[in-house]
Length: 502
Ligand SMILES: Cc1cc2nc3c(=O)[nH]c(=O)nc-3n(C[C@H](O)[C@H](O)[C@H](O)COP(=O)(O)OP(=O)(O)OC[C@H]3O[C@@H](n4cnc5c(N)ncnc54)[C@H](O)[C@@H]3O)c2cc1C
Image (cartoon, rainbow, N blue to C red; front, top):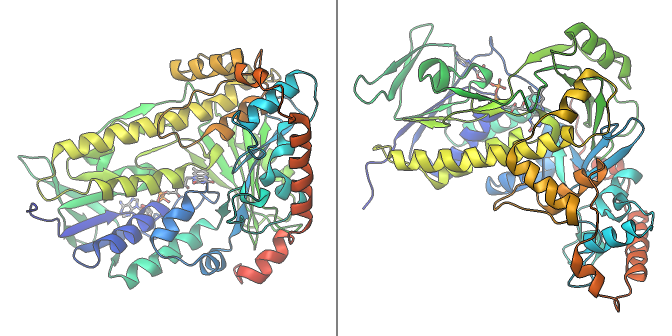
């Protein structure tokens, strides 16, 4: 026996969050629930959010979305990781790859052997053992091999895509599955006097939409979760002080690279995201250390192609809502919280917000236990990601501006301090359960940003009979041969999913 089912869901907001939610609910609820999405063209969307991480592929697969069609419709390209430039020191770069380092050849993990050799004076950088970086650096791409014995199976990938086309693509998907789209601006929200639950939203033209479950996808407005329900916000700016961004696409001056670039700047950093039809660029900065005009000038001066359109200035406060699910309202997307786009985690948080909502899907009784569990899981996830982002700032040798001095000296959350202490002492990675960023990601950022262990993990010193140097050389040779046989990323795109987008 089940409780009385939810029959009417109202989603307010039609950015990536709104349409990802609509698509996933329409797919999961199979027409047995009325789903209405209200969005306002006049208000518009934030319109950025173009780099993703590998789990996005599971989201698409769950929805039955065909990869080449998706990439064609969104002007998408492949992403093998992120190159971080000037983060540790000006002039130094490293790569955060998707996938593992090397190939396991013993019970001791590959990275521990690398560490042992490196600390003993073998100079080969860790990047040289990443298949994803070998491909990215050479501008090549093909799908990972299914055969786990092959070096070509050791990388993973995600996408870059045009955020506006993405929302449009998902809108088509959702409408085809019965989602009703309403154009208009919500001006008023009604609540039940006793439970405090939202009962309906009304548009400025007077149309009213009743619902049993409301999803707040209104972006930074937080129309339902904050303006109506006064849920509260936990501010993390003291750890992640960037609070502004200026975005400006440009024409491509070269074939699209299969990776994102993040270049550290005086008071923040800049992204470069290559799509098929243009390059997305943006400068994320801390307003306490830089004026918007300066941020814009720095961005414009560094564009690699002719600018397309006007610069777009955005403001945000890093942090999260105190509750993501409050009563009969669930906040998904920027209305739930925002951490800067350094590791492309926002769309991922949307995806997991939706999947978690489906896993804990309520009936009309809206059990507070479901909300409690949703909030606990989501908070923990936000905090794990937050700490990984903070690491990028804390682990720096830069002292060339007040911004870098501040982040290098700041106190970090206890859990992060504990993880860093472990790695520094003996190269161990403390991994929390359900960690989105697994060992290779932490190793990439630790070692790329100068957090090196005093000694290698103990087990590696017992394995004197393993021919480590020889095995590591074999890995490098296998990687070089595999990359040489792959097509250029641009050629792969042209063949697989060429887009006509502008
Ligand atoms: C600078 C920057 C860079 C980013 N880069 C990345 C990235 O590389 N990767 C990544 O994963 N994420 C990134 N993000 C985050 C990503 O852009 C967002 O998570 C994603 O776009 C979802 O936004 P949203 O749908 O929550 O909000 P929005 O896009 O702002 O959409 C809000 C919607 O609500 C509607 N709305 C608001 N008020 C009302 C109202 N009163 N009535 C009716 N409708 C209303 C609007 O019309 C709009 O449709 C970035 C964000 C920023 C700020």
